[in-house]
Length: 284
Image 1 (spheres, helix red, strand yellow):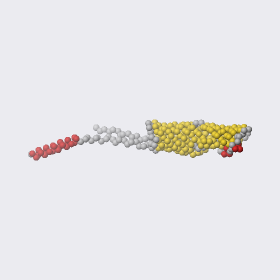
Image 2: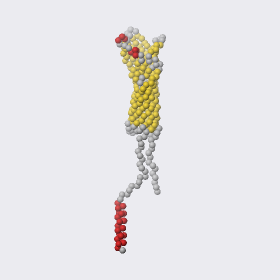
Image 3: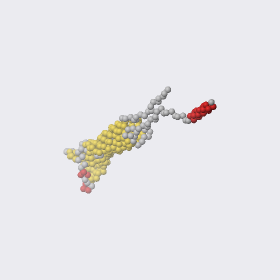
Image 4: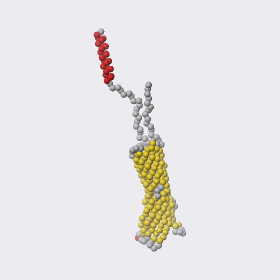
């Protein structure tokens, strides 16, 4: 009988000890209802773009392509273009959050050129002096393949830089060259005019600007571009002496460049995936 009581006492002591040890153990946290969502991936996608702006153009020289016209003379030249409108459309792809590329087609509206030559004779033509006043119009079609690097985003604003290469179709028209000259004794007046002509050239551009992301599908851009479009040329020129027309060589507009300012929009055609947690499920 005493052995049974001893066995019961030992079992009770063991049970009480186990319960006390379990009470001292920390309570395990309940399993999570769902796993936390993965961070959004670096998202790319197709986009369309459109831009409007204005140009501020320069030309290095306006030259008679008949080189003999400059024998025995020195020429000091000034000239400038009026500002013109810019309109372009394009399509591109954003590869990730820092690199994108697009192709654009741009119409550059007609601008007016005014220029002046001051001509002085040298050597055998010493004593000759004169001026030539030029007027003309010019427009372009510009096609570029562009690449951009986005430099990070602060408060939804992303600065970027880029470059483009392509081709430009430069059209020069309405060219008139009116001149007055004297050889010290006899004064004379001349008038040359030329028809329009177009020329395709290699073109390149450098870009910089700021982009503002309005929403996941729409981005606004304020951008500057430096564009080099090569040279333009007129048709054959003609001089009129009051009786007959005499045919002469064309005139060249050498090395046309422009400082452009544009306001643009980009429409993303692919929306980034939405990462939302699954609905909360309760059991009861």
